[in-house]
Length: 349
Image (cartoon, rainbow, N blue to C red; front, side):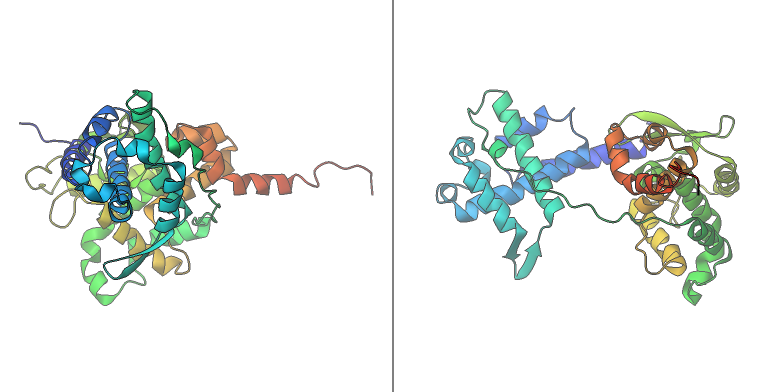
């Protein structure tokens, strides 16, 4: 039996996790999740299941009709009984509540996500004529206030890669393991900074996904489709150095073909990469909270500054909608506008 890819394993794990979540949800939702299987990614379906569980838990605690049933036994008629003001009360409750002695808050992005889960569920049953009304449509989505985009400056990128190479600033304990990790760590950081790929695309790379002849890697994009991403000379050098090291390491069973390996010779995890990025970046720029996604933003910013082509940036980053890209790089557009203010002269001095 051939080794499963990272993404195949992720799908299997998501399927099993969703089955467990469905045991705590109304039985009629099995039809809904089957219906969106080929429309939404596995992680999206799990997120919907978690948010819908919050909704039905709330109803079970606060609605007298729902209290007559166990959550799994709730009839689909409950959806027709819920009105828009019931959903608004739920949203208001989710902003701040207590559970198991802990105070839980949800910001505007979390509230929007929970409403999106409700909209998806109601849209499915309404579209299939299982229910006659869709009360969620009468509930306004919260306005999301934009946040400052955190990214690395050019000098910080250079300092970050230098830190990986020389280990300056690491603790004594970290330095004990540094020599055995720096080639791999440098390859990962150079790849993320030099291509803008997502962290899941990085950890999902297999040995045969690296194509040095054509200067590219094959990745599985968000949404499950395959794409080629091309890399430059600096990325190629870092990948080659690690490839020489990687060929001398035998991955454990089930991870033989994984490109980036952990100390245990298994495929490196998303969490491992997040910890690694934090370890080095807080030495270089302790005031910025740098994550792998911030490295992706850094690449997108640099590419846009060099080319001025927002459509190219969207294509390279794998954005389906260029408006997503524009949203992230609006600040750069402002800088370009500012630089143009004195370009046109009205009168000679």
